Image 1 (cartoon, rainbow, N blue to C red):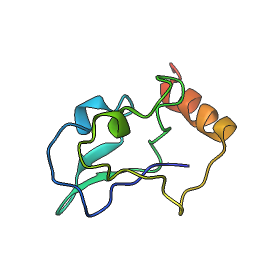
Image 2 (image 1 turned 90 degrees about the vertical axis):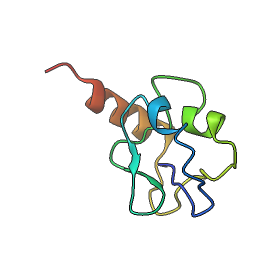
Image 3 (image 1 turned 180 degrees about the vertical axis):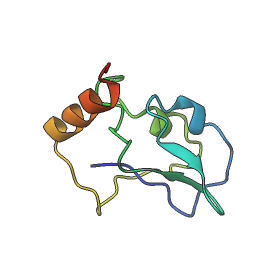
Image 4 (image 1 turned 90 degrees about the horizontal axis):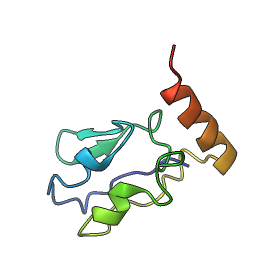
Length: 83
């Protein structure tokens, strides 16, 4: 499943540059994660990099965007496909 950023986000700016898929961007009030781009770093890293660097632990799994490991891998392959 994709990840999400909760309203506990302090806008510290450390997560956005860590995302290999460009899924994190500044929202109206806090950073947001595009579930269409988030692979939980599957294919890139063993652990989601945004979660690793977040100082306030505000990046849980998004229950509205459940995906299996195979689905995340397929999304990674689609996102990184060289046309």
